[in-house]
Image (cartoon, rainbow, N blue to C red; front, side):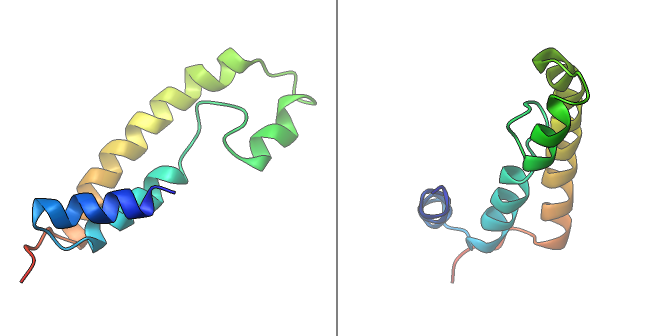
Length: 84
């Protein structure tokens, strides 16, 4: 859904879209702050006795860590290069 938006944004900024798309792929797969973020969260949500706030408390910190790592690693491994 966001692929064409990110692709167009990268081209309009004048950069190769690949680093933008890699960052997008990592970002959309790191949803830790809600129990509906992944099927494994839903599997443990009821039987584990967790509440929505439990996921928010731990998940927001994990999302911030993954965001920082995503920005750093993508820029190191796939540096931004202008379009030819």
